[in-house]
Amino acid sequence: MNKIYHKTAKYISILTCLTLLVFNYASANYAFKKKIKSVCSSYRVSVNASSMDFDSNLFSLTLESNRNNFEMVMLVGFASAGQAVSHQNSLGLSNAYVPQEISVKVNVPSSKGETMVFEATCSSNDAIQLAAGTLDSSEFMQKIDLQTS
Image 1 (tube, rainbow, N blue to C red):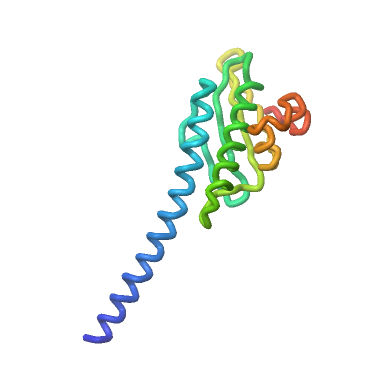
Image 2: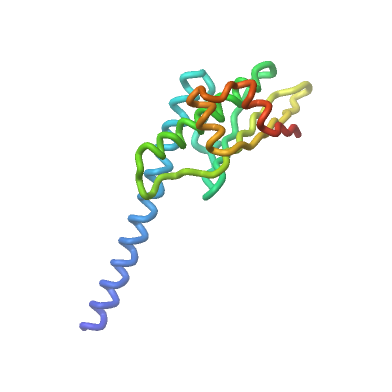
């Protein structure tokens, strides 16, 4: 009987620890997602949680654009991520999500129902500077390596 009690207690302890770890990680991602959505919506750029990818060192965001404003959408994506990283840093939490790099993909419709994809990656520090206004948007666009496919 005592042996069964110890196994059950051990199992419950492990399950509780795992649940707490998952909850802490999810709450950090929730704050990050909420900041991204807030900034994007203020610029009328639609975004949903499924377009965000949270790797340990790389945050990826995929956005949709019209034909003529993909650069603005890309800048809003980087600026929103910069604000989210800055917000995570200001919270000072042990489980804060602070990626090293940020990647933004913008899907742009082209002729005949095809889609062009513009993709760029920058450091979190560059995105934070863009969001804070200490890095001009034209300077920022020159710093990043814009790829098309």
